[in-house]
Length: 247
Image 1 (cartoon, one colour):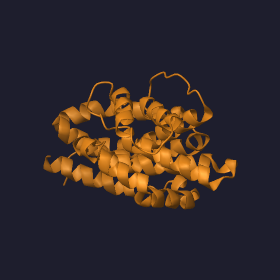
Image 2 (image 1 turned 135 degrees about the vertical axis):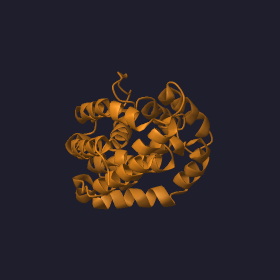
Image 3 (image 1 turned 45 degrees about the horizontal axis):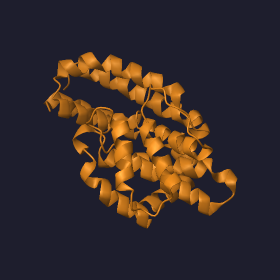
Image 4 (image 1 turned 90 degrees about the horizontal axis):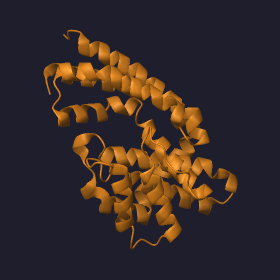
């Protein structure tokens, strides 16, 4: 990475870390519980170990990305199942959503990565103490997490909500997180020159903007656009820095 890209990367990270998103303020308790479950529940500890060899950190969708998606998917799961008034059921849904988060990018560098990850998830979870329905719902969520594609509706409300929670948590990463880690790892992996990055940047920002209206959960539709707007603001600043001389 050139000196200029290193400079712009650090500036973009500074901008990204200044974002105080309402989702994490308004749902601090749910987010804290989701993190506790992610780091301590036996099934999550086991799955983290099982998926670790298949997460490619070099392409911006590795361990850190999957962890953030898993925790936010679990948070959304807790929020969206509050009305069932059953803490045990809400916790179970959080765990299933977090499993989706860990599994969704295990085949990230392959063609049709979501479909292949869904198939692979069934192999990884084969001996887990989950019902066939739960395993099928996880596979469905993983298969349908990509943006700008048409997918069939899930067969049950649980499968639809699990798919929606994973999708929204994954797309939250299109906000400030893009400019902390993802963008720079992809640029490094692809070995793009500065000029190539500049040429690709406007199309990337346009794609980010299209995500705003695609969030699926009720909570995601309210809070998701703020992630993207913050990301777009940072992205515009990064684009200006890329095109100008640096000290």
